[in-house]
Image 1 (cartoon, rainbow, N blue to C red):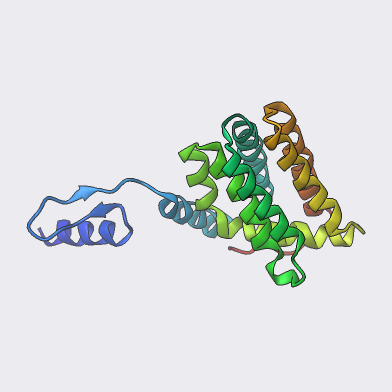
Image 2: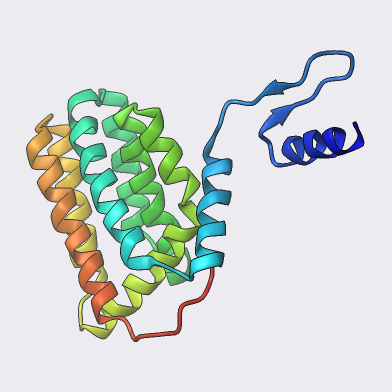
Length: 193
């Protein structure tokens, strides 16, 4: 019985169970926190796999852009434009990656697909690290921030125009920029995120 209580306490501590005094223990609805822990554990056990993380990102975010163009409202258009404006206004490069991630998170939210939002939220800290690596490579390759802002604007314009295939293609081209940055980044030993 003690072992069972300890196991339940551990699972509740991980957010997988909900315990309430005098009531039954319930299984919690999985969210991005559980996904993040799973991915972090995998990175810790196998080493950072940023190439695979980028492949996952490409697959999910292209689909998110397509859905966003189908499902966006005028309010969503305004919100996404505000995210782009915030990205374009960054002068402190330490805030660049968070502003970039906010734009992509907004595209995911506009897709109105809980699985897309949960998976991207769950790997958010790893995506920040991925963005930092890609930015380093992007700069090493002699590229600049304006090119990235222009690519984000293409995604925004396609979503606002309600053109799903154009939005998917624009997101794909932008994520090709990230891939170029990753390929150009100085090689460093894998580290866990």
